[in-house]
Length: 264
Length: 261
Image (cartoon, rainbow over all chains, first blue to last red; front, side, top):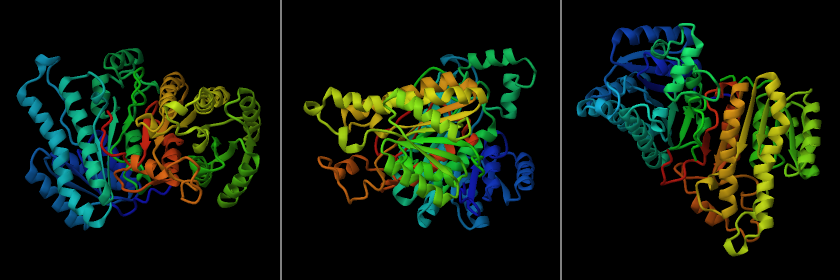
């Protein structure tokens, strides 16, 4: 299927590592010009070079902090200048862990505000900055990466920030849809990023222990294994495409089918 | 993106017209080997010829009634033989046509209409799944995509809502059971979709299409085209969709107002 992404201009926040990096790679593989944004210049530069080499596409690193409105506006101005516009925004920048301690006692006001500032307001800031560019050309895609924590008790802050992203998404979709901009939310579950591989012990050779850890975290899924970041990237590339025009405001869950509960 | 559908063997039910037909067109375009099914033989054979001519792949046609388990057992046996003894992808799209049972009010709703709809769309999807699952399990790979509808989330008619949410419930149960065998089962909810039938020429008696369109007012500001639904289904039929299992993908263009979590 021709996703018609060749030459389209994309921003992926949190694009230097993990799921964001895999998404940037998937877009670049389809010929998109991709700006990856993040806070660490060295990580971004290395990732941009790797993705550019792997895909043959143009990939630029832009240092930015989505916790700051000023930094976000500078990011979008830089990319619009470099590429001549923005067609696709993938909001993926979030801090880990969502919560520092267990239970409600582990929630500090300060960390709660910080998490919502980065993942919820951060997504809103980037959307506010790119929407006029997209509306001006009558086409755009905004894909918000949230997480299955919206539907599961993993941590209090994790659930609050993720379901807030879903709420933000549908409001943006209804408002921006008439301008040709489809806004969607993607919920990954446990995903085999480098950080998760380490935390879940995916590489320590003890499959039973890994399964136990996943079960304890509520990430026991239908496909029977942890989803790979590339597999999330493919779904996001489809959502970034004109071919996804029928999907607007709704969620696509990419957790490999978390067992048990049914959502309608 | 290479959807890796070239040479995959697919069966699409309810494919002689509408959304099912568009899905069959798209899978054929991606190079899948295809058998389409529907009740009416003439329209089905015409559709198979047209899809084959447009895509350059051979398209088989088997007339069957998905509400009848014996008809499915026989017809799917024939379809699977046509595909060379196996099947990789099943798209369940056969439903009672819109004018027959779609929009009765409480006082008009008969038990016959209720069962006719559930026999076709709910039990029918189960009949076809029974026919293909053993083949997919044997190969350790498969995709089953169930076409339901936004009636699961909206009051259009009693039977529509029940049958559509039943398909979603069945989908998740099948996904949890078949997932370990490499089979991803998903449900797709179209809203009001522009097909040859809703294109304005034949307004079925007793159906107010304008009212339906108003209830489906969406974010993109226009009716979704059948082909736009088919693109999503083609993605879900692909190995590239492995992260999606048991959940719904709503392809209504974003029905306005309510937020689902």
